[in-house]
Image (cartoon, rainbow, N blue to C red):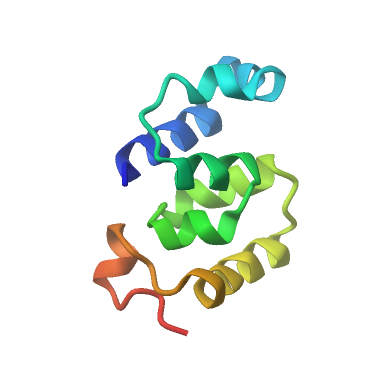
Length: 103
């Protein structure tokens, strides 16, 4: 898994309007710039916020990506809970070290 690259991508989407516009216009060209696993690509493309959370994406980054993907706040929170139920505990990153997001 390449959590670093997922978070780098999401950070760039959150902070750089030109990257965000490229992503909205031609997602695959942006995704090709990052070394992502197939599971990560599926999660980004879907978008599956719950899976991204379980993969270990930091919530501060993830909440802005969720907003870009038109998630309302309550839906974002629910997506993370659903991700834990569907995909198991958090696998990497800060949340894995603080208990794995156990339900």
